[in-house]
Image (cartoon, rainbow, N blue to C red):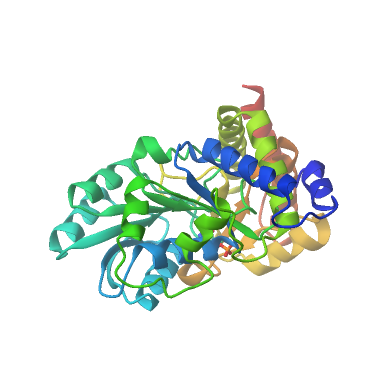
Length: 371
Ligand SMILES: Cc1ncc(COP(=O)(O)O)c(C=O)c1O
């Protein structure tokens, strides 16, 4: 996190209906509309982490018996399917191998086979695999079949373009702790006009009182009706984090993420490491790296943490033990981190008995920065 975000969190508290806090809420909504590239009024932070945003979107858009087409190619698509099932939806899974993206043709086939699809849901940045899912074509297909489009932008928002209005995304959610570089605790969501109409036309009450958007909209809208006590300090933090994003400029921020990703990728090759996600669909902020045969992935991760103070992730689900996941998100997407993690990997792999030329990874990354 940027020190300004930390400082914002220690500011004195305000009441959740204090005029100064209300004004801050308006600023948060305006800034969120900038990062989501939308004009939708219903663009607010949900109290809770990214999963709360996921749940809010699904339980508000779906009623029992509604049909949902969901892309499943990692942990978070799987979670969306699970949440939708619990909401009583009929779930049509469109599966792709982990590390690959879901093809538009697959979604089209599922939509054709469905009886009356209401929603297509898909993860933009699959944090468990590092796959970067194209959305615009799938959104168009959803609309052609009379369905809405929901996107999980937890890891993408603030790191790669998220063009909600241009791509025709009807609803999306994100999280604060990824490329927005804010502590975990809020989940920004946006609902466009079609999604708002679907919520208004519901025949049944949303089963979650806490996540009922019609109620939340009365607190975040002009009525200012108390619903639940807003997490005040988290909203301070989010406002500051969003200001930092806007000060840097979205394009500059995306370019920074892309550049550091390219440098990391260039550094991995000379030490025998390769990115695991499908070529052409690799996220810049989440780099899944295939663990070479014969290397104990947990040991290398342990060495990175103990000897170098660097924490990287292990694989999840079917990728457990098979990949490392290197995050270069928001504030942490920086040259010094790329060079440090590559130097640490060289060191840890040598300690594991691999033949690695000292400086090979760091040198290759430096060359991309110099180019
Ligand atoms: C793509 C994606 N969706 C949803 C979530 C869930 O968010 P949280 O863990 O903040 O509840 C995550 C968390 O890592 C994520 O990466």
